Length: 163
Image 1 (cartoon, rainbow, N blue to C red):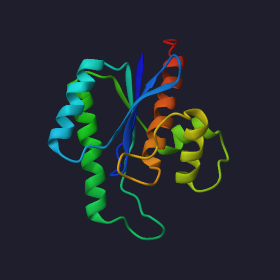
Image 2 (cartoon, rainbow, N blue to C red):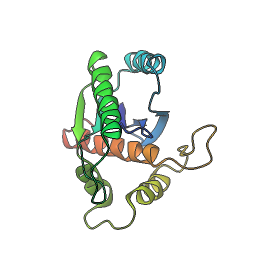
Image 3 (cartoon, rainbow, N blue to C red):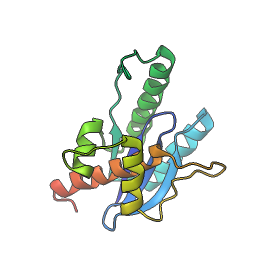
Image 4 (cartoon, helix red, strand yellow):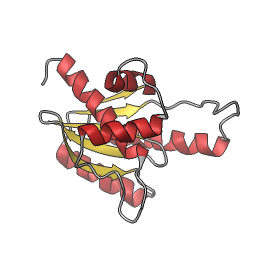
């Protein structure tokens, strides 16, 4: 049974998690063009995951300043396209606010930089997961977030009695 976790940000990713064994099966960075979106759609159609969990997005002020229109639009486009692709291939999809999946993964009272915290937790839970994309030198917190969002999805399926 495959569960998808998706961080739809520009540096986000999709992680396919084997729900029964909690193993990362695939990691895809967010597509950059229509050809990549089509390839992802075709692959998801073939795999037929059980559940997709997408981190809910919203326009937010950042550090006392208003988020730029361009970044807000880009985020909204990725979010909407992910929801459309998942709907087109017939995958049950839920959206989850960041606070909900983070509370599930870390418990209450998590402290520290959320990006570093996600990378550290993903390394603990999924030590073989590639956090550094090909051609890059730094770990991507979007990949870590996507894996942890997928873990939240496994919890949803357990709560439903499907695992």
